[in-house]
Image (cartoon, rainbow over all chains, first blue to last red; front, side, top):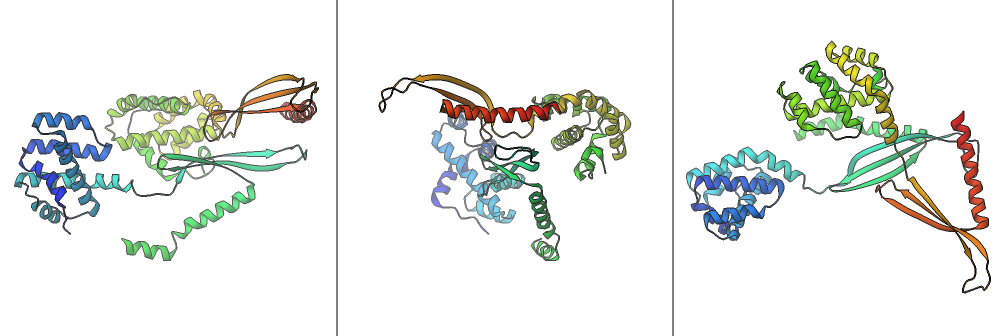
Length: 199
Length: 200
């Protein structure tokens, strides 16, 4: 599968065609940092001054390189496809090798970062529990009622929500039994057949 | 089957980490224990010290994290079930940790067992907590509806720390003399019941 580049993208990357290989390596590092941590405008200023081009060209170059990297990692294209795709852009031999090496070494890492960006439901973060015995209330004194109080914390990206739940022990036993059955379902022959076919 | 796991089986990952823990010397093990106990007592762990301790054994980052996690589990779970240091050392010996390591771990654990249990008691799940109470008694002379009222009333403000946000929020209300008497009576009943339980 070949990557298709639109004209604006080719324009941005054209700036990178005639620079030194050392500068290209610098740009590769900057794009990786961009993917991992976000844009850093000060670096663009410094690079623009050294190469005596406007900062915007530098930024476009870095973003173009970053887009190239993320698209190729997303589609998990093979080496040959990657080389053919960048051939159309007009890079020199050594720069092609450099870009290929960059793609192969960092492919897994970029994929890991991309996988975290998928949409998600809130998932489990923490569960604290407490076993109490209710001895009296305003309405009825001299009682003995065991109660389990739980605080379930779920995390959805950045937000944390906490839910306070109460149950009696019988209910809790039933809950654990149902959840256990759900886990056992993974070991059933039906699920095993599906896992084998996915692999 | 192990007391420090609460009479359950020891988790597989802890068994796997015992062999990683055996690679460092027992002196370094004791220093690591001290760091982990500091973390359990609520202070921040100093990763630079940890890296220096594990530098000799050439641990990777994953190994360091695994060691800390395993020690964390062992010490926290042992103090949770109130295991004394000798039984803990014996059980760790059975799991395969070398003798010098178990004795040094047992000693640091035994020294801080009470502190850990106190800290865990404080950290146990609490729902909303009462931080403080403020009150004021006013005397209402008259109002727009009635010319002569001449009644006392009390205003109460309770500062409550909520479960979800760790913020202290005020809950305030006003009560007339009769209502407040009922309120006070109920609270006194609850208080006497709590006293009878704490003394017995």
